[in-house]
Length: 285
View 1 (cartoon, helix red, strand yellow):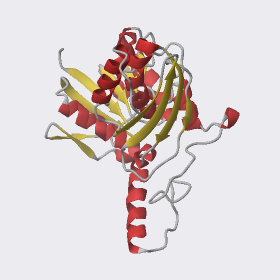
View 2 (spheres, one colour):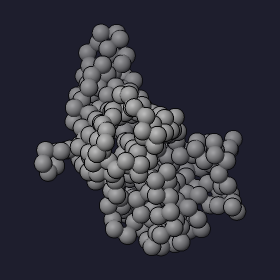
View 3 (cartoon, rainbow, N blue to C red):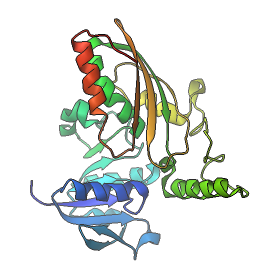
View 4 (spheres, helix red, strand yellow):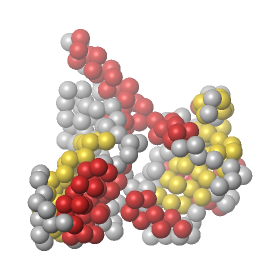
């Protein structure tokens, strides 16, 4: 693959910073990196392959010449700017919720439906919520082997879901708890997160589910079945934890996945489970 001009929309945030690290770790053929952020970040730099790269204001014109755009910004910014990048010929891979349910935007988990990447008429490719990915990667092969009929998911989200403000607040709260001080304002969290479990993320939607729970249910399609989900927030910096109960015609199993967003999926657990199903050996919880 020839070297590419890669732009990152939201390059100074938690997700954008992680994307830059992943490009370095995978030795992706980046000929030029264009870190994009809001006007208040202009003048800052990001480190990439040992060099300090200046941050550029995210405007439609900033996408000129870009081959690939990685979206690490919020929904509103993604909706406003990624179509502009696509019009200029860039292929956009977006991490926000903005395009996930659009019928002409492929929603891709590479371990499941990588072939869908080839069909992107709007030059935009979306990926599901991180917890949805973590849950479906180990369950998809089991569905192909035995046909899942029911999937019950409890996912415990980390502070990093609220971006850098969430990470900073959890660090502050842990210091307050350790020193016995006054907690004070807990923004961006509705309640204290340190040494606590907040049973609601997002606003309540139809049928009593929150917006985060609806993401788990809707962004897995086409999934083994429509999952029933519960999504609280837990006092972890980055690691998500999922507990899944899977049922087919033949068996019911429980599976626990604990992983940071950027780590490798739990392939060892997956391989053991898939082999057990394929050979009809008893499964243990």
